[in-house]
Image (tube, rainbow, N blue to C red; front, side, top):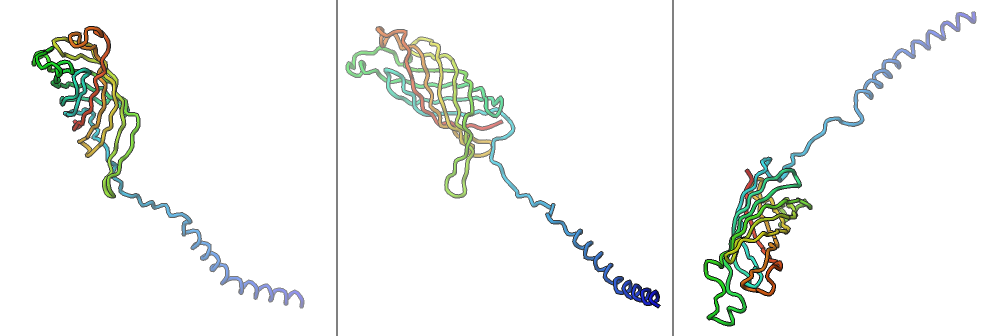
Length: 221
């Protein structure tokens, strides 16, 4: 008798458990199908303002050059650069200016230490440039420009006062990338060459520091 009662009880328990098992299986399946982290990443469209991949830069400059003993005068010329790497470039410059009268000539109008042709100064040099501090400049709310602060060191020749002099060139500048093909430079340079003997015979052979401040517009090829 007890055995029959136990069998009936087990059959009832099995019948009650059957609807529960599929429900648990369905619940487990629904949980597994929903990922905790969505792998679909939405990427933002970014526009990076930078120079073209080509690494030749050509342009013209103008500004002022202070020639020792001759005052400050307008200077203009051309520059050509080859960007070897992101940080290093080689640059050549050709510039010219015409100097005025010295202080001694200004005091004595009859004194002419140089002819008009000898007052033309022409220089050309080659420099190694180093982009030291890349950055970004914001103008207003909607305009931003990539920039580089760079250093220059090189050597060349200066033709002035019927003489040709070895010249050391040192300076620094700021390059603004206006477009991916156009750059604007603000550059300061010191051109160091010997003093003109006819102007200062007592100090002939001493070095003269001739400061130059220029603005350049260059394009990339």
